[in-house]
Structure formats: C-alpha cells, structure tokens
Length: 338
Length: 174
Image 1 (cartoon, each protein chain N blue to C red):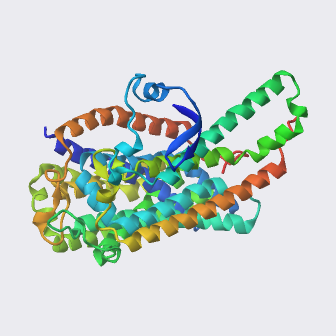
Image 2: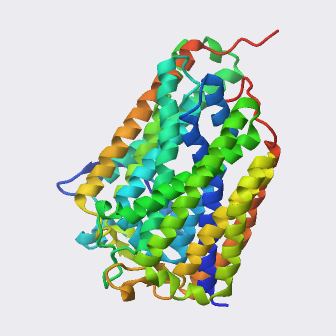
Image 3: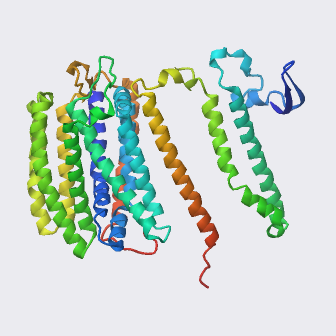
C-alpha cells in the first residue's frame, strides 16, 4: 500500500483521537461556566483533572505527524491559519494554568478569574477546531505555488463559523455525557438533560451543514460516493446518532460515552474520506489543492516516521487507557484535588 | 583552549593567556590535532552578531563556575557540620535563586544568536525560512500577545512563590 495513503489515515486517526479525547474535556470546561456553586465547579475541574493534559498530547502528535508526513500542508496551514493558531495557543495556556492557579489563593475574585480562564479557554478551542475543519472543507485560498493567500477574516466565513458552532455543540454534548458518567445526583441529571438538548441541536446543525457543503463544496462528494467505506461509516454515524438518546435515557452513561465517541469518529472519518486524496482543497482553483501526492515527504521519511509512529502510538493509547482506568468511577473531592 | 585572557584589538591579540593547546580540538572532534576554524576564516555573511553571542556565552560559563564553586564550599561546610551556622553562605544561596534562570536564558541567547544566519546549519538560512504569507503585523500581534501573557504569568508566579515562602513549611504532625 502507498505510504502516502497510510499517512493520510494516520493523520486522520490522530485528529479523530484528539477530537474524542480533548473534545470531552473542552465540553466539561464549557459546562463549568454554568456550574451552580463552588463544589460543582471543583467537580467539573476534577472530572478531567487527571486526563486533560494527556488528551492534549494528541494535538501535538497530530501536528507533528502532519509536519513529518506532509510538510507542505503543515507550512501552508500553520502559516495561513497563523492568527487562529496564536489565539488557540493563548486559550490553551490560560486553560492549562487555571488548573494549577485556581486553588492557590483563597479569594472569590481570584477563583472567579480562573474559572473564566478555564471556561473561555475551553470554549475558544472547541469553536476554533470546527472553524479550522470548516475552512478545509470549504477550501482555502491556495495559489499556484501552494501558499495560503487568505487572511484571518476570510477564515471567519459563514460556512466555517457554522462548522465551528457544530463542533462546539458536539463537544458540549460529548462533555456532558462524560461528566454525567463521572458525577451523581442533581449534577448528573442536569448533564443528561444538557446532553439531550445538545444532541437535538447537533442533529439540526449536522443536517444543515451537510446540505450546505453539498451545495458549497460539491468536490467533497465526487469520489467519496463511489467508495463503499463511505456507506459503512454513514451507517455507523446514523446508528450512533439514533441510539445516543435511547442510551442516554436508559442511564448507562459509560455506554453513551462510547457511542458519542463513535459518532465523532464516524463523522470525522466521513469528512476525511470526502477530502481524500486532497488534504487542503484550494478555493481559487481546485487544481492548486494540496494532495497526498504533491505535499508529502520523501518515501524514506514516510517509512522512518511510520516505524516511529507504530512504536509511539500504542504507547500513547496504552497510557491513555491506563490513566482512565486508574481514575475510573465517580469524582471524589479531597484535600489534594484541584 | 584558552581559559583566561585579556583581549586587545589594536593589534588584535590576547595577553595574559592561560591555555591548554589541543583541548578544544579534542572536545569538538575527539582529536587533539583537528583544526578548529577561527571566526576570521568564515565569510563575513556567515558570521553571527558577535558581541551578544560572546557576552551571553561567557556570562553563562561564569555563572556555571560560580555554581560549582559555592557548591564545593557548601559541601565542605556540610562535611565539617558548620553549614547551617554560616549565615553569609546561606544568604548567598537565597540571593542566587534567580541565577540558574539567568544562566539558562543566557545560554539560550548564545545558541539562538550564535547560530545566525542559519536556521538549519549549512542548509537553510533564517531569511529563507520565514513564512511568506504571515505579515509583519501578524508577527507583531503574536509577540505582543505572548509577551503580555508571559509577563502576566511570570508576575503571578513570583506572587504565588513569595506567598508560599512567607507561609513557611508545613509543620509535620507529631
């Protein structure tokens, strides 16, 4: 099999892993803005306290994989999305610091500031993730030399903002399900209600955005409709969307979390499949698009990186599973908690 | 390798030198006879800003030597069981807390300035490596943004550190 195809899916899997893992902790962070009291705010923070930084590793590996396998895409996207990336970094810095700083000073103003840093630092990345994907699906102004000549304001086009809102709603749903699994009583009940509400919004937005991309980016449906994998993923996606509210109602939150993870994987898998073999379609002229063929590293680099990835990725999956296992069950607040 | 010297510019020479010939060749290439190119053997276009590289590198080394020295003195006093009565040394240690950070930054400056004009030595110059589609304004925005964030976080860090130190160590339950 062509190494470039393997790497296309490798980058895809890393982005999907990132969306599933950091997705729920962004969701919990956003929900913390609506927490009722000090105890609830601490419950939100401690629900993801042990795992959020491990989850963010997937963003680094995704970016690293893109750099190694498709340096031309890395250069075009990271320079083209410069301002968006800087805002993302700023948000992630404040979010990361809020965990450590929040409990250090016994003052309500101090805690309020870091609560906002935690909430907004989760909200902004959740939206920007969708905006970035929206731009890729919409097409980026790539000129004949492979350079993104667009500006930050062009990134904020209606379609991309729509995808940004879609990812916000999706992560809130995913986070609410995770928090419901980790909490009890009143908080759990409210999380389940929020997850159901977010599910409804998600279904509406997903249908709207799919129709919008059918009209706006017809190239996404050119090749993918001939691919049997497209229909398999479609069945999985529809199955996950239909079963989610049923499982939510039954109260099996662990199972609901697995289904919403599957939903994210199938949805992003579907997007990857409709892009293939393009990585960044050009909105100026489709023939300027960056593809796995004109943007990849040399075969030797791809081969070397594949060996490293095949050793590294199981390690990351291994410790991710391990840490979730260690901190399984409901959250308990102790002296040592955040 | 020259350990100590006083540099003169007219004529260019070193006076009062303390040196061990061949040591630097051995450190760089594992061979005491290897040729170390002098700065005057490089084309002018390939030479980094010298003053900053020289000053930051040498001050880093001075600080490193200082750390070794005070550690040796303190180890001796510890062995003699007089360390905790030597107030001047303990005070010196407290005032030396920021110095490793300074040494770290100086080393970073020496490495970053000293490798100019290359970003990847021998392959890619810094001037060729810049993003053509990121404007100067956007770069300025990010520098200001991160400058403010780091100043803020640095300030808060010092505030919390001082608070913790003033609070003192927690008394163990007996």
